Image 1 (cartoon, rainbow, N blue to C red):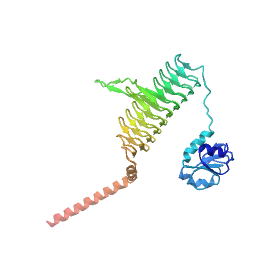
Image 2 (cartoon, one colour):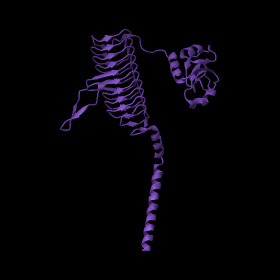
Image 3 (tube, rainbow, N blue to C red):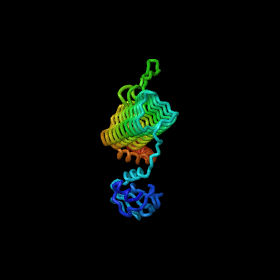
Image 4 (tube, rainbow, N blue to C red):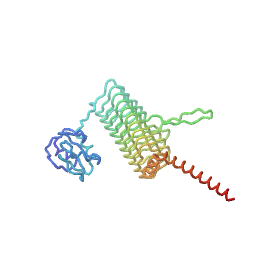
Length: 348
């Protein structure tokens, strides 16, 4: 693809030969002739002068490069769009594999691809252009929208609803039973039937081996454009806001509402029945036991303001030395008090 065409499609300003041929996108350390690379992080600025790439995507304010440049205000976004130009879809062709099992009353839209050993239950609906990879199970009455991609070994339980362009990575379980039990007088537990709805709106993506549980009443809802990483647990009755990001190993307890454009980094834990305000950011391994206002920026456990956490964590390393100093001061004070007491006794 010619560099001038790439610049036009990415809406970047081109400085250099627009007829130069580009064959792939590569990282700045690996890029060579024929490659398009990018610089979005200032820590790699020192590599700019040494790059051997044919062209590089830079910010408008970045220094010159020894190759053609594509200038933009958002180089990382332009990089992502450039990758899409060079990636050819690898999804299987439309059709239903003879080794699949599809209920007679299931509705299969035009151009759907159903792989081997897929099971589609009664009254289920699969929207046009969707792809179901091998071993996918779609429960009774479930509905999958248009142009969805459901990877191998995914379970979409009964009556789960997926919007359009939803992507579910391998091994995820959507609509498993929520964790609901009531203790009896004899100490045993009665299971609460988990029969309510699970809804994933348009353009949601769910990572591998993530679980999204159904509640007993109400619904669990993942709103439009939310992106959920691998190994995330979303409990029954949770609401995840639009364009919210949940990184790997996040756990959200039941009946919590997370607002729009929230970012929870890896291993963040959120207690149940809370409200997390829109625009909140929680750094890795934060524990959130209480509701948070909009645009909070928190860290640690229990979660406190990020700046306070950074100051506190800087002190942690000094605690052994501080303890030693305190012990020494206590010893010296005790000695001084003993001397003063002895002097007072002698005066009498």
